Length: 566
Ligand code: CTP
Ligand code: MG
Image 1 (spheres, rainbow, N blue to C red):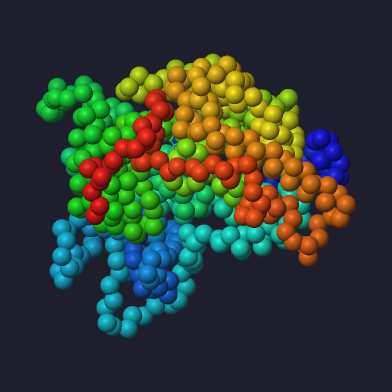
Image 2: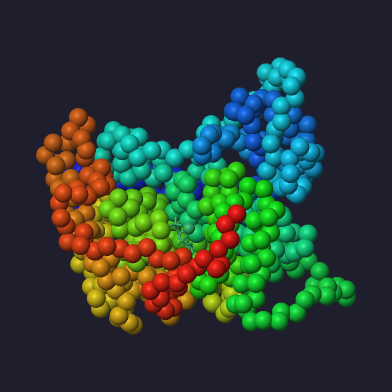
């Protein structure tokens, strides 16, 4: 079938050209010497310490703001964005050359006597009007610094996106355009690291070893514009910071409080306090909700200056290492990320995924399905996780405080994996749908560790072995009905995509004949056609049932006693 697809397009297997998050572009099948996840995270953390965010009346305030703020140091870049609620709020992110300069700008800021509120130091500022006409020195001195983005986190609406895809020359190009237009952009990543930096800075006086680290789709390379931020806050040295091992030999040792309770209730109590601190003192933080009964307790909040939903946890370091694994899979081959974006979009459009957690497949599980598919193609595109584990060096050893072994090779050279598979992404997309149309979900579990299907250890409808905690099932939440729906939808998708390819062969791309290609794949199901999956009514899970992949979630569980809404 694949060769038929290739004939339709009259194409030789060819290397797609799309940009990496970390900027490497390599031919398919060759080894990638990519940036490491740690380098990426450190660079972004450091960038956040050099940045401030200033609320302004509009982007037209930029020259005046620039001239005012350059007194504190050299501004190397600036980005404008808007937050839209009832009205539009404008913000400018200024990036200084070094952290000292950003710090000086923050220290120069005044507290507004007219407003109530506890004075707090943070990188979130606003630019007040003087009432005087200011000379725009920018134009006078001929400064070259321009706004690198205008309305920089605006999400392209569906209609505009579909219009863009309609104009593409073929499905391959549609996939590339979808990726380029929806992936989390540079400014989006900056804002997420600033959110982390705000929390870390706020508590650094009392907890100098504390580290707040983004994980999940904000950093794993599979995040789309507007995605939520998953944040892990560690108060100890487990997230190793540069200062953590600085004074091992000192004879003066800090007194600390003894932990009186066990790990889990200790974490819950600490999170209560952190939740209060965020709610009461941190500028921009609102709608704080504490979900402390979940397997991984979290604090959810909204950041009004960043337009971000944030899930903060304090005991889920394996989630951070899981993000590192996903990031690496994205770096192995440049086809991985565009393919996953396309499949996530398809799943969203046919209602397989849903922003609220429930008995349906999550984006994370779906990503695992794609990675597994790419591991077991005839000529694998991705290595198994066991290959990464076997190649680990002593510096790759990571064991979390709860004993989860997150050791795997971080060095691409040491892993030495290269793929001979040169299929186009559109070929892989069709193969993905065909693969899961025939997959034995009833008896088989998906193991990314082994890169092959294994026997199912229990009766879960969909079983994806958790790569870092292999006794757990990542997709334990998925009901039988939702798994059945997945099987039906992948069959439909294979059928639609094949027809699209056939149509293309007969007529070529006729842009007046819309929609075509991915647009038909992403079509919302026609409500008048009754399909088998429409008999199933998915149930939205209580938030307390989130992240629980050890036991079957209870039918209902009230979270209201843990909920404090600011
Ligand atoms: N995670 C995990 N095991 C799970 C669920 C999540 O290790 N059973 C980790 C993964 O690293 C995942 C991260 O937690 O990327 C965040 O989970 P989630 O927010 O559900 O997924 P995202 O990848 O962030 O995707 P989305 O854009 O839907 O938020
Ligand atoms: Mg997430």
